[in-house]
Length: 224
Image 1 (cartoon, one colour):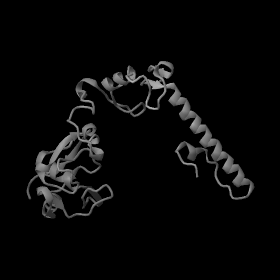
Image 2: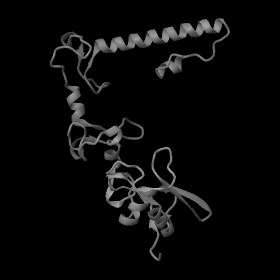
Image 3: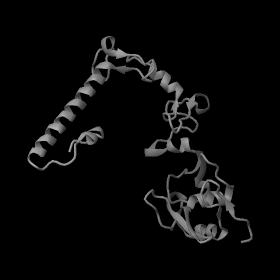
Image 4: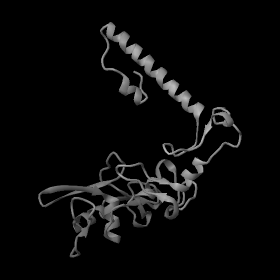
């Protein structure tokens, strides 16, 4: 109990008291695959969380983060604690690892390709271009290079349009090559959907049952 508190600079609070670490380690139940399942409450994201009072304020954090910090020290900004076992409530130390936010985000929806690579196997160290708050999201320059110069070998696009007639290379305003016919079809479908929605709105307004204009909803793919 005499150990110093564990610092977590990425949070508003600055320490996790030793009493909280002991509580997290005590509140576990054995689970499948050797997991140590935390019995603390689970938030909507599926991770167990623990709270405590300190300096007149209430603080809350995730239980697996507490365990990692107690064993390994601080978590630097840009990094996150990942579950190797993919069981979100597990706090077993050897089922946890530290990953960059980029690699951790790539493990969603069952995807789990090698660390440090994009889905096509290009090295992050060599090809990854980070995003900015004001600009576009991060991207793999090697993958973008592939799509900029990509031409379907079959001679037709995925919708059957002839490449010789409709295929367009990437340009300054568009990072990937594309089928002009497919783009035109998509634009026509959007205009027709918007026209139908507006017609229905005007008809409803004449009968007194209309409400808001549907333009914004159309932009989100909704027509009702």
